[in-house]
Length: 91
Length: 493
Image 1 (cartoon, chains in turn red, purple):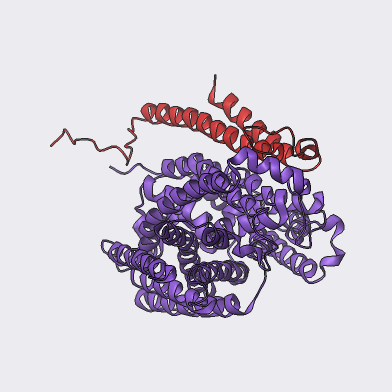
Image 2 (cartoon, one colour):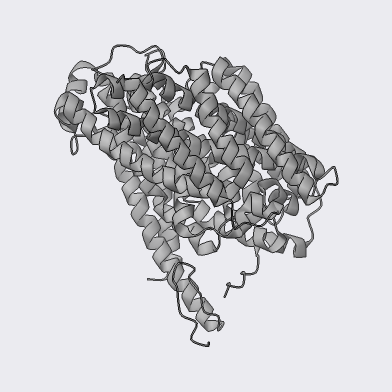
């Protein structure tokens, strides 16, 4: 799967997200029942979208990081992750 | 010993700890404006994550949110809906802003916008817009802190005193350590908030109703209107979809335009950190779920509270919890308020000095830092005055401010993605948006379908921005490319 396809997918996902939680689509999912995991459906609906949004962003970030690493390798620059401590072996 | 004395001791210990962290944090940054305002651009992921989360989740979420769940039911779900939608664009916009900012040394939003759209008037206007939105936001934090302290001390420490103490502490560490204090105290406070929210959000429904499911089943039986979208108005009548939907839209658009969030792009060590912060942001959204459960727990348990914003502390006190938990909750709620308030105060002062004064008056670095400090005290004073005199709901305060700050979204997007945007377009668009927003704010009855005044402002803003840009000469291509196609920053070794 190309990064470009993933980007398009994620953008489409967020557009759907926007439609799903606002009028008019949200009117279909705004009832109290059925209860999902003890929560009213209206609350479960918006919470589910938060979780899906999280997953979508994770997927996007995975592909973007891979793309960036690939780009930098091509340019001969190595990405030094500030979170990762590495030993400077040139010393 | 009286409960309130023990609670106050726990709270005092917590505040003392926060102050200590805040004061120590200032060591290690350079005594320059860059150091004070942008933390020498050195924050790692952990700190960035908690700054973002803790900054966004404030008294609004901790008190206002449950207050709405308690009094307006499903209307509060707009808060759950806009967060992820609002942060997602920052995945692309944030790193781009950081890249441009690093190249030109920007520390504020206005500097960035004026970089692309050179105009002193624009700088001043942005400062004005920002401060107009920021003051109510600070006010609600102070009020939240005051509410918590008044409630848990059973009135011995009234709202005005509680707010003064909490914000006195914030003022001290922000004045001494600048934005680095904000970073480390937020990390501490953010962790605290999340733990307290989850613990209470699970505990209260179980202890009052026998579980989350049973709680909602009972609410459904007695007050079903609270669980159906779009919920209720403050008066208890049915809210309408126009109001609910536009609240989501304006909040999503405005979320990353808040100066204190936007400016984080200038403090990140690395673009990848900004993106990771965006990816992790939904986890902070999930923290709202137990907080709303607390609000719902109050529905059948507490008779009509005069001020719904008090529901959370009220419940905590009524439910015979061990006193240490009450104290820790209070500390958690204060965390929520202070971790946002400090960032807001800092941002307000920085914006006024950097964007409202410096473009017009020459001054040394030392004078700038001094002036920022003076303004922090001033902004604090003005917000405090409103906090103790105004009785408006916390959520309403913020929702109103969103309409103003969202007016910064079109110029930001235009600066980064539209080559044909011009300074005249940006300026006239912003003026139109601000004027229309203000008009509908003061004439709320004229809003069609109860649509948020900020959204109506954007409906005026966008066409004006586009039309005036197209009617005025284009900017130089080289200049535009610095913003729309910035070269990648060299990674630090």
